[in-house]
Image (cartoon, rainbow, N blue to C red; front, side):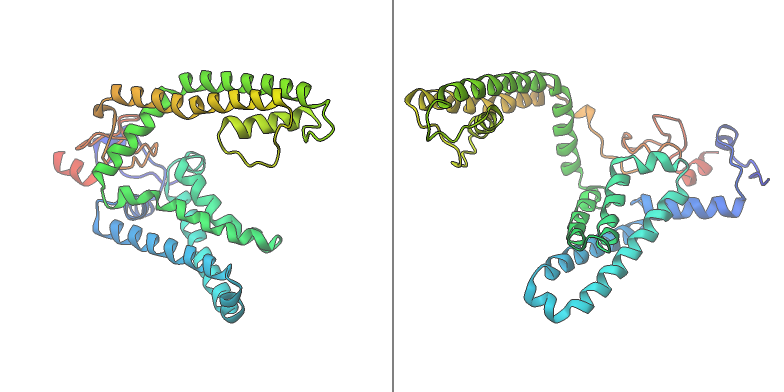
Length: 300
């Protein structure tokens, strides 16, 4: 069993059982893949974004019959080449992180996994390969790569406001659900006696109520009786509340949310993978692990 020689105080708190060379290689690779503060880290992540955009473009081109018929083989080769590169990158991320399970079930981990599955599933279900366009979700990293502070602050502010207003929005949506079920049942009772009414069951009536209250209005199902149309008018007016009430709730919560709850630091903790740190932080706020070992060496 190999043990790393203790050189720094943090190693007494977080000892490792890996070879020194392997541990150093993992640290350097982690900085390149996960961090954006270093030159090589920025180059790697920008190249990754370029590959994502190229891949999404290839998927779109393959869905065009004329282009696919002429360049099918080239598109398939490029698609598989990029998919293999993404697969290697995904497993490399799993290898260098301290807790792979945490990464797998993290937001970025799920997106990375889902982005490589469609191509492999396309072997058995050909049409699923076009789902590879969801790889564009990986562009969410762009805010960390280019340090778009305003974007990060705005995005974090909105997410914080939505989280704080979930209970109020949940109560409102529960009320709307009850209204939809009740009106769906009422419209069925009213319309069921008419031979030309398309509402032949309560589920169909509830579907109509949902379409109406959300102001979508497909028009595939409409009431034919006078009372049914009156009830539809009432539901249409209620539909305006479905649009405005959640917006008002989120807006009021947004006003009460302070910018101090947001973060712009791009450092990722190698121990627990927490990436929500204050600017200038040197230690992880969750586990205390050093965020930048080079700066820590200067301090010690």
